[in-house]
Length: 459
Length: 77
Image 1: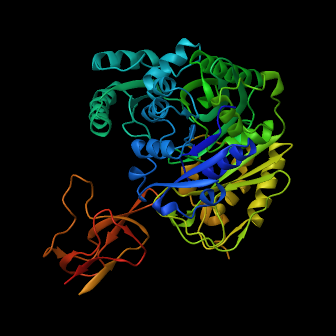
Image 2 (image 1 turned 90 degrees about the vertical axis):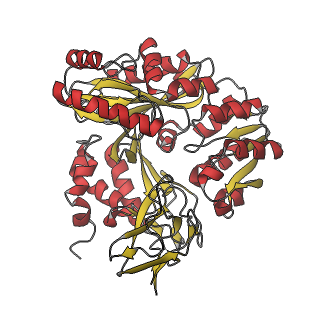
Image 3 (image 1 turned 135 degrees about the horizontal axis):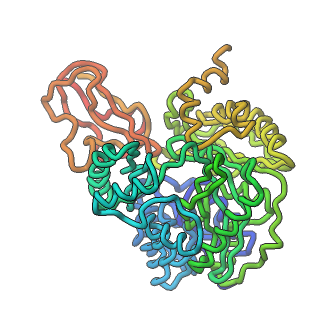
């Protein structure tokens, strides 16, 4: 292991997670923090802590020069970016390497090629991974756009090739709508991302979001099975499972193998995720993007495989070959994670950055809570609202849902409003229990008032 | 004089976006329900609304300042 001193360039629960994994490997940890995060849990747990700037993320966690400088001055030999912030910035990965340190993740070139949706799609296509039918790359000629739409069939989605987060997306049901919306999408993409490139894709009705966890050492890659992340609100995942439910075994194998092929095609190093849309009616899956980092929902994969993904990514970053082969990785039982956000689900998910009161977390066999809370901790208002994750593991999906419902009843996080009432209602939902869900299911369910009805409206 | 307080903790913005002018300037007429600023809390933007009619007396909190719930953001004359 060439990594002796690991600099953690992130905050919150993932920073705690990384400190734990690094300590299990005997690595000295240096935790970065903003002025607003001086008393966060990872700072208390790490061997050292360094302030990298003011509360605003743009002036601290997102400031490439400040982070690289701080890591160098701390004598770090490697930097773990966590997720979010600079985790998928090729500029950051390159700056770390130029400064003579190891970036815990794939190469800057891999991040870059996967970061642009058009080039990612081309790489996937070349590696033999099915992609959503659409334009081969960006379309600048509107007649060409119309011909492609005619060929793949309406409705079609018009997307910006740069950016993300759903901006610049239009759906055209007819040729007339395409003629109207495509120029709008170009304008919006130009304004938002400084690049008016668009591409066109077939619309998959009621898609499920299924993603495959892969791990590579730069030469060889393995998959750690898939996760089902179809319960989403505003394109944010709220409840994640492993494995996906009611997925034909041949489809699972094909999805997982395609993900490994893609990872090996880009000489992937570290933990990554290949995301697919799954059309359950047609039993077809399509590549949408690759995330070149550890993800929020990685614990469900850890629960069903027994692997420590964060420790593995640190080991391969340090130059080790993958210590596991595909045959070593077995799927065991079913795991579910729910995201605990400091938000009031009964008041349109209004953020609630309060002071943590009494804390009672039901951690025992098959129940895990990843978090950064302690009693008396003031949740800062400057960052996202994720305060932790509750993960359960059981033999079957039904048993896991029961275990989740039980854990949600006993967990206590005083002083805050959290999304626990949402998860309690989801655990009781007949659609969730039967697996009759897709990425467009949750928001109409919320709009129909299901949450209010199930969380004490009668009392 | 009436104070307009922050409803939540977070980062205060006097403008709808960095390129725009502030929501109000000194001497502007203010009606109940007018937006006088935004507070960013956990990546959400909450509008700060005037709760009374009056004349704008100026911002008390700097643009992009970190504020607590209840901090005075602006005053009305």
